[in-house]
Length: 429
Ligand SMILES: [Mg+2]
Image 1 (cartoon, rainbow, N blue to C red):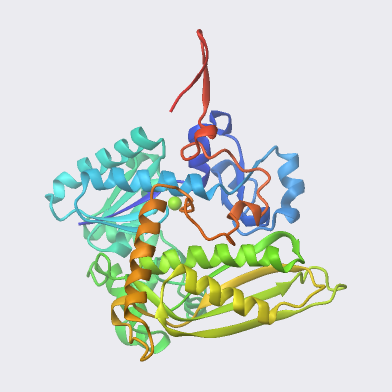
Image 2 (cartoon, protein in one colour):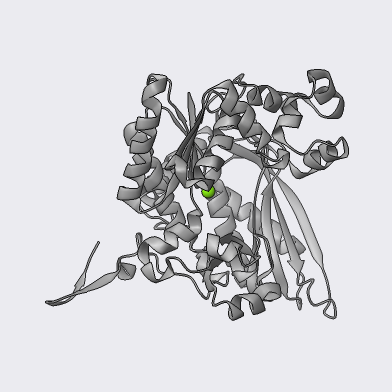
């Protein structure tokens, strides 16, 4: 069997672990720069708030209902996520981390009748080790396991673990699931299906294979087969090498000075090249774009972007940063206020399949690889990966607004919570 474990309202749950005052009250977590809602507690959902709502549009509703507003604390969420995943791995052998709050687990090492017990043990351990509530879905395919996890979350009767392990349950689950909630069916496909009168997963599963291929493609057919209990998506099979990558941010306030943009672009370049190395990829070139604040149409507007090819594909932070800064200087126009900028790497290759340049220096290449691996190993111990960085780098918090961010409880010594005891104030870990 395959399991999908999903952390319930993950960002909200992370905040509640360290701040019990947030329990049982409506909470909204905001995106970068406190722009949009990215996560809600169940209490906030019942007020009609939705993910993606721009905060300024729903501020009145939030104020009237005393909704606790928090800036996203992604360093905290990332750290708790890695603890959740480590806990899962302490029980299960084969785990595929799917997103910050979801992981697939291979249950084949256990007999079917043992799976629920093991699943409950995983949920219990995660709760004990991290304080995060989770839901586990179990079934013969990933897509069905994902549907089972929705039931596990929605209905307390399942006590956090739901299995779809026979034909009756499979059929019933599909009837109760809307087609747009099926993993792999996007909004556009759901709309197309609606025009054929298909609204539930069961109706979708009742279509013929020919009809599926007529209105969509082989990927959708795979989803269809998975709903019939035929496993088509293996553990890790989504791990298709990435073809491109980008790193963009909106700034808290408009940036006018070139040196401030250089700081931000250096930070983007540092983070994106680390990601390249993590994924054993290299880029063939570096693109940079800049955009003025479109919310102020009365001010001069400008969008600049350019792309510089590298002499040979690489993932060296120094080379990528230098190239990105050269690109930035080409497109920068004085006298404008920039609201958004980013780096894009549109042509990635496997780092082991690099075609070296005829004039490239082999020794230099080896030196670069060693330097990057030393920097990565030093930075691995820091949650922000920035113990060692280039002089032009500016930390992310300086670039974005996050006025209501909770402390970095788990990753910054000065942010560790303090508890009062009868002997006075003590620090706990
Ligand atoms: Mg979740």
